[in-house]
Length: 82
Image (cartoon, rainbow, N blue to C red; front, side):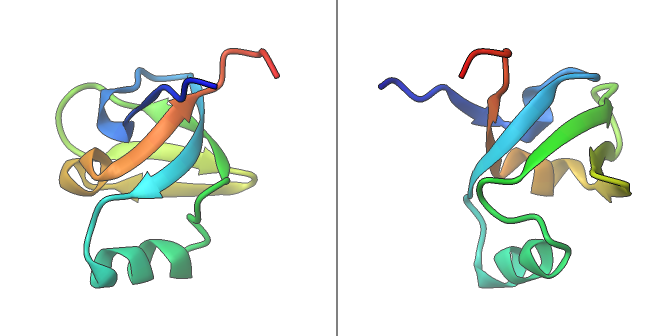
């Protein structure tokens, strides 16, 4: 099965994604994991205008992520197929 992972920072608004991996150091992983952003998590991109932070929705929670951090978060875009 071919996996199509891309950095979160490249995904357009209103897309749903699944977090696959984090390509950052332990500090970044620890920060994301403490917020509940762990591999396997599904989230929706609320705002990604190409500059500044991205806004994502995880359930009822809204999270602002810096562009550098979002670039290190590898996701798979959910296209509705299982």
